[in-house]
Amino acid sequence: MRIGLVPMSAKPYHLGHHMLVQLAALGDASDAAVEGAPENDEVFVLVSYTSRGTKPGIKKSGGKERPIPGETPIFGEDMKYIWETLLIPNLEFPSNVTVLTPADGILPSPITSVHKVLEALHVAREAGTPSVTLPYIGATVNPEETVITVYSDIDDIDQNYPESLMNKLYPGSFGTAIMKFGVPRSSTVEISGTKMRKMLCNGDKEGFLPMLPPLPRDIAGEVFDTLSTSAIRLCPRSEWSSVSERLIRNLVRFML
Image 1 (cartoon, one colour):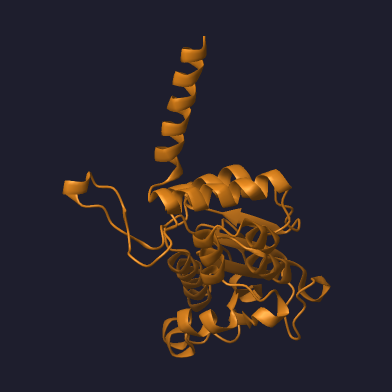
Image 2 (cartoon, helix red, strand yellow):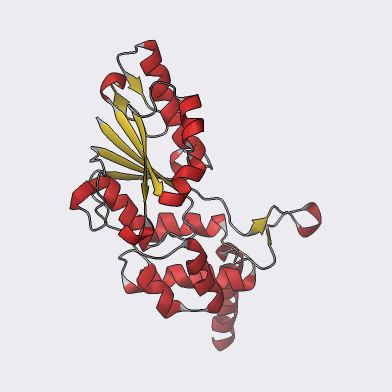
């Protein structure tokens, strides 16, 4: 069995991420075909809900996250809402793709979750176990007949999964049962999270929307509006939307 793992922070999830997932799922049949890309029976996308561009809250500020000066904050609470309400219900993934989030029980760090999966396969191979159920992804496999490939941007793959570390953690398995595959942005789309966050900061909705994966226009618009409003107001959607709803209710009562 061949399994693809695609861990991502995705702040925000953009077209490049989506094409990377398609490559892992479809191989040469994808729009982002890369020579030598393996074909997988199952692909698991591991998503993070952690914030980016913020500091942990402190007691005197009520425990609320504080944006880091000079950065566009992306609140994990907003990403949870976006993934569960806007992306997963509206995106078309290949049939062999499963998206896993912290709500499904994976760890806050997708990279750590990936290593737990790889460790389970490696330990089972070393012990000669005939069958193992891999944590978080739930696949039951024969360790001797399974190959797991980790996918990421070509720069991130070497930073997050250096060969020295992989050989140390999974001796005898790395390079045979455990592989990694870096995908250049030129094969997907020339966009990055940094550029997407800059568009949010600049209010560039027309530049932002085409860089999202295929979504209905109103859904894509809500992704932008949620992230940009939170960045401007320096607080997550749950705080500013409740204020907006309260103002609307007060206005309705006044008009009545």
